[in-house]
Length: 216
Ligand code: SF4
Ligand code: SF4
Image 1: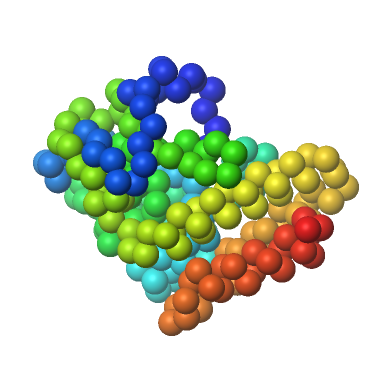
Image 2 (image 1 turned 120 degrees about the horizontal axis):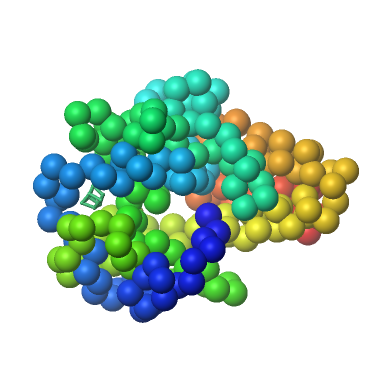
């Protein structure tokens, strides 16, 4: 999600690579669930997040929309975000995340965030968001995501597709609805097949979407 504050206002002013150490460790959060009680509406979900949620809950995309997701405009395009009940993420029960192993990318990173620049991204440490973040950890360990090389390639490619789709929808108002519906259908409504390789399937869908919807 685009932020209006300057980087200096919301971060410690540094950019981190995946092998850097950063004071993001929260010591297991020790009973705190503040971010889960305040940020659900800002947790925008990528196709991999929804794929993981489907695995965790056994629900289809439609089933998730009925229970724990909602569709809203984010940065000019319709995307799913976590649903909240009076601000509290619906996946939080007794102050614990009920889908911890399959929690969304945003939750995995927090209190880290991502800064996209040109064709790359770095990690940023958000300040004033988490009182307990004080323990030095390696970024790679904190985000706890296997196959980092393919994951980071996927993150960049998805970011590019969102940006191009939003730009195309703004430039071509008569195609705006089709672009948004096609993106939702191809990357969310049609489930990725659980036992196959997610990244491979995503790349195949991305190639087709770019060619058929965004025009190369
Ligand atoms: S605000 Fe910080 S300590 Fe509290 S739940 Fe979130 S990450 Fe953990
Ligand atoms: S999905 Fe889990 S970790 Fe993320 S906000 Fe909801 S309860 Fe918290």
